[in-house]
Length: 329
Image (cartoon, rainbow, N blue to C red; front, side, top):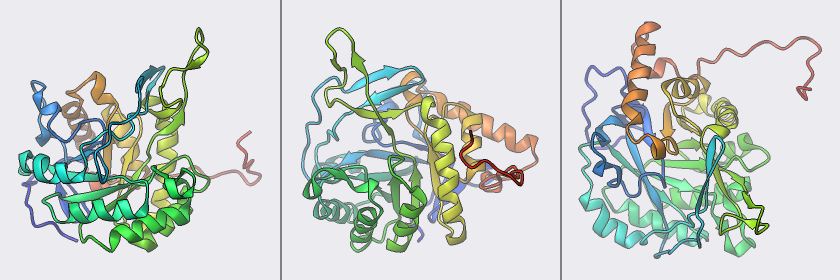
C-alpha cells in the first residue's frame, strides 16, 4: 500500500519505509503529546521535518470535553495521564485542522478512538476521505456495550475493531496494542488476520497516584496511563514479542515507551521496531528529536550500516542453559 505523497529521502541514512510511506527519520511523535500537529511548531527550533511522522490526538465521532482534573501527574521516571480523549470531533478535525497542516514537512497519522465499533467505523470512514497519510486505531478505549471492558484487552474484540475499520479504508492501518493484556502475541496474530498493516507497541500501562492527606487518588479519573522511562523495559519486551509474530508477515512496528535518547531508540530498533515513538520526553525537552536523529546517525556510521532498516530485528538472544528456570527466579 503506497502513498501518492512524496517526501524527499535521497541520501538520507535515517530514511525509513513504513507501510509504503517514506519517513525521513524513524521518529514518530506520539498521539496525545503534540496536539493536532501544530502545537510544538510554536517552539523556537522545533520542526516537523525532524520526524518521520506525527500522530494526531485521539479523535472520536463527536466532541469530547475529557476527564475532570487532575489529568496529569509526574511520577518518578514517568507521567500519569487521564485526559479522557478531549477533542473537537472528527468532522472538525477533517474540515478545519487537516487543511492547516503542512503535508510537505512530514507524514500525518490520524488516531481513531471510540466507545463502540460503530463509532470506530464512522471516524475511520471520515478520515479515509481526507488527506491523512495513515490511520492508527486506539483499541484501549472502553467498549460501552460490553460494560466498559477495553477493546484492546480482549484479542477477539481487538480483531473485530480492526476488521471493521479495514472494511472502510484503504489507508495504512496501524493498531496500537495495549500492554494491559494476558497475551499480546495472540492479539497481534488476530489483528494481522483482521487486516492490520502495522502495530504501535505499546500503549501506556495503567497506574495510580494517591494523595496521602486526603487519602484519595490524585488523578480525577482515579487511574491513568503511565508513560515515560519507567515503562521502557516492558515496552522493549512487548516490542520484541510482537516482532516475533510480525517478521514473517512483513508487518512493521512503531516501538514506543520511555524513549528519551538515541540509545533508547536504537534498542527498540534492534528489538524489532521499524520506527520509534517519542512522546513523554517532549514534555521536558521539546528539541529532543534532532538529538536522537544525530545519535542514530552516529551509531550507523560507527557500525558501518547504511540504513535504519539494517538494525531492525537484529537482537541476538542469549541461549538458555539446559535446565532453564522459566520463572526467572
